Image 1 (spheres, rainbow, N blue to C red):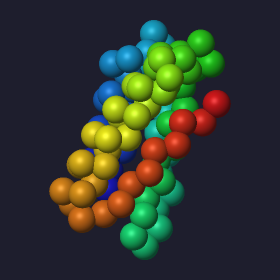
Image 2 (spheres, rainbow, N blue to C red):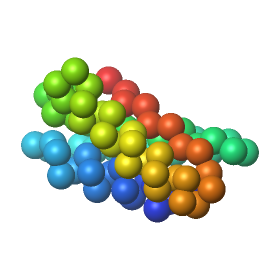
Image 3 (cartoon, one colour):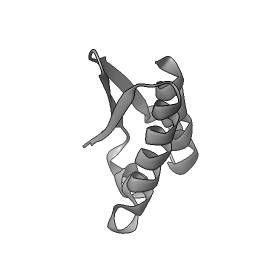
Length: 79
């Protein structure tokens, strides 16, 4: 499951001004895995995007990648 964690981390680091402050933690359940993304406060808008478009795109990519390994993953952006 670390592949999904690395994927989210890679995407987030590419978007933000402070890539060293990007943290992704993983809470793994039996069928579902929750990935929590934390970024610097000033980078929160960049990760979410206008009307949540960037966050939605990241969730779509995560969904496609998790489907490929037959597991369900949820992305939560923590303030």
